[in-house]
Image (cartoon, rainbow over all chains, first blue to last red; front, side, top):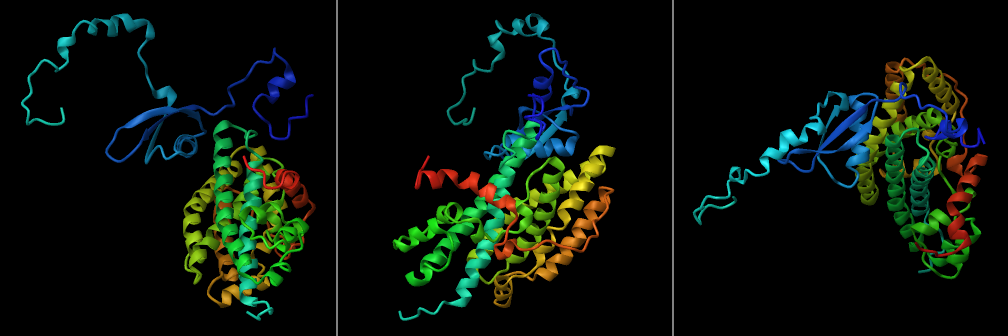
Length: 119
Length: 281
């Protein structure tokens, strides 16, 4: 069993060889990167997903191969995931729910003149 | 219409196109063998993309080669190949297409270089083979953009955009492995040394190469050999790797004499069409 799949070093080979008790050591793995794609000139870069890469240059190339192969974009940003700071989901109640009953913050109560377009 | 005499120029153009097409198909098929086996998901997809680029280039070239074949008189068409399955189709008076050229020719009708049919072995060997071939392909296509044959020039121009990226991909990997750990350095050096003897054939002109060069269709292989050497040297230098120096070179692929690996590759690639002729999916 052990060496059958060893030719390519597939993901899962080590686990298969060692059984369920094998601990997966991630210290040798490439860091995680967040990928942002601009779909066409003039639009914002939007978060597309994440991937692993050894450095920024490889992250951009990997992003090109993984996220733009169906003509999704014309520009790529990558940032190492550890530099993205996020709000705590446990704070959601405090942070976001108070906005729920304050619909007057939406600018939808004004009467707009007919000649005003694109609003 | 009494010309049973074979038009040598067209015949050489066919061989020239097949040499190029077979390099693309066999290299593409080899790379596609990594699909689902890549060391990481991102590189698995990268290699699958690259493999599809090569197979796409092969399609365009086989379409052109098939049109050249179909323009010959029927008596000559039956003498173009030595592959039973393909000749059966031709002798029935049927026109052939890109799939027939890919799936119904036997190894002794293939004109790809020995380099591209060599097995993937491991990541280092795959990167080494791609690096040698992509560098060649880049200068080959750059030169063919100004071919006097408009179909060839157009295919070269379209392909070059893809090959630009292939070359960046394989060069980057040479540098990463060479300038990486002691183990990666040693393994890529071993792979480069081992595959080196297959690089001479890339620049050995065949009768078709010479005929097409003289007509302004083909490539001056001695000129792109120097460009190839300079580029290989520069990348290996940056990767802290040593340029192999062996002067003995393998040859034969472009003259349809192949290593044992091609037969196995074709057996797998062609099995479905041979077992279930004209099958579609």
